[in-house]
Image (tube, rainbow, N blue to C red):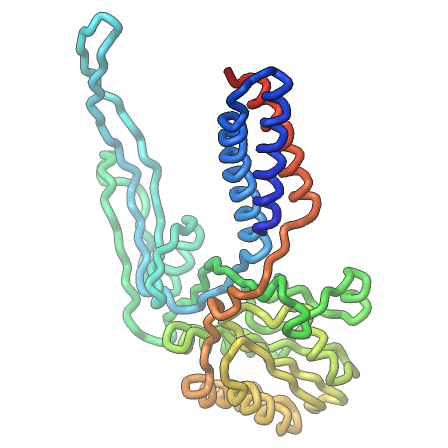
Length: 351
């Protein structure tokens, strides 16, 4: 990272000095200083953007919707004061129309803008009539709010997306996370992480995914965790679970992933992984699932519910900031070339 900045500054300064001297400018240090400062800023912005791009990641928080709101369209009248070229002051009224808005609040303390379709779905789940239209056609922006009544049978599971810095994405060798080609991943039948970003279970008995989603909503805020269950292909060996862990780069920072291998309708093996400081939770869930004859969804979820609150210790990803993030060679060369061109331009025009 710093090598790129140093090279850009040196290239800009040297080019500016050389160009200025060819122009017979005796104060060559002045264009050199200006070019070096500009190159430093450019190189820092380029490297910062590169690091952010390489370490930017997303995690998903699951909870319950606590309330939904519908705000009617409303009209705002703004008074604008204008002054013309002769100093004459005039005022005029501008009409601004604001469209309808729908929002959902959840147990994680998040407020999310939603669509009208989502609003109506949540209202139906709550057993409340969705509001619509305006009050007597007057666009006043009246707010209609429906709060959840607390009954489990009417609860609406809700997941939101959040970004975070994940240095482990570029430190694969430190964690035995290797890159898989598209062909290799397809041959092993490894699912992409995106396949389960909205559903917590890939496979499993009917109704298990919904039960797991509710478990995640129950544990999400208190434990800072989101649990996934993934079923391996038929007859897959236990190392398929390790391959998925490497392919997913260990998963997102709040995820506990449980991989289930079955043969002839029975649990053959289980592998659990996640970014917990304690391996106890992974061992407890793995042993509970692997000890089953046929997969028992309620028993597996009960094992998760029992182990996670006391044994899941979320990792602090700031501890991985020491991992070096390399700036791509092509980007370093581009920055240096731009610095050379900028140095030449500054040196030739400096008076």
